[in-house]
Image (tube, rainbow, N blue to C red; front, side):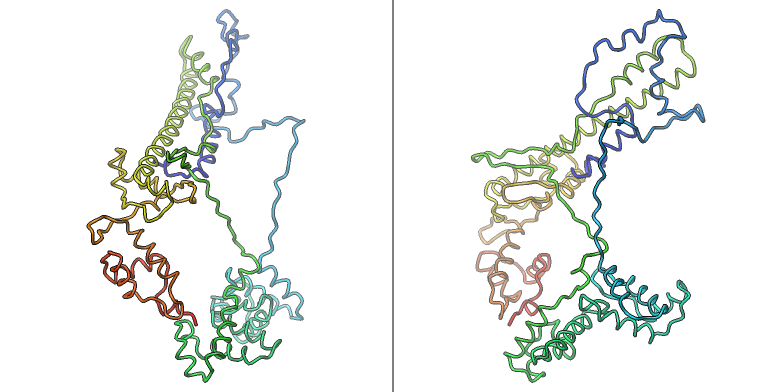
Length: 466
């Protein structure tokens, strides 16, 4: 079950770990070595001259405790003639490094420099200081032995807030936007920038809730002045730290586990095997087992036989587990492909049928938990994009004609309606409910609200644009 849950991208690493831990497991095509060991096991050789194949595996065994055995985790398989290449390492400068460099250009005493360095080290990846000033004062005295007042810390913080990019060192979004606007206004005095500062400084709550009418009526701005100022605010960077690189950036790549090709109306399914090499049991270990099974029995021979047998059995088990994984993945994806055939032929989301885990479980004769493990961590590549398998699972609803339709189809209609709505008068949940009813889907307003939230679509008020 653990191997089944591992995605294709991680499977190669898991196989390599198993090969390193088990010397009886090998990858690559299995070769026949004709008569290479015939003379080696010649019973006519003297005891002193006889070759002991276990000698080649001394590194896998340890003699400290005669009853214990362990593995060798590294091997030197290179020759003096081999070429060695260093893996290039990218040295990305974080925005904290840039800020510390700017701090070095300021004429500050040692105490303020240490306070500034500590503040910069506490900025998050977006560039905000979420730690309260009082907390920083306590940290400095306990960890740095620096007795700094809150006023001294604020003084250094204001210096950092003057660094590039504009907005770093802010304690919240409102302060971040104000820092940027005030710097722009100093460099380019303009009424529009003054109005933008007024919006963020005095009407921030109304701005976040998009109560634009209230701002216009209370601020005394004309609608045109407000629109120009609003465009300035919306052009600001709410995460200035992210504009200069993050301390922890990860690129996530998806390697599809399956590929489906539409070949003139016939769907062809293939399993990605790039990360699954051919595995087999080492012939050397099999030969060793045969060798030690002959002759007189003694304690040392029994230990050797037990060790070799355990490694061979473990290798066979792992090989069978990989084969079973392949089979389970294939039959599960085949069932999903057959069930959602119309979608894989057309790429039309409205063609997706309602499908739950039990539908596939009954079809392939596997437990629901097994289907769940496959669906949650595997991807399929199609001509219409790459999808996670759980994308194809959804509940069903009945339309006015008594036909069962997928909830995904309902969500698609909601999303299309929102994308094509009048942004100055966005559709409310009641209006979306009425539109769906006209299309033959009788759904409660609260259900529409749930689907809208699942799609990440805010309420109509927050979607309003002047």
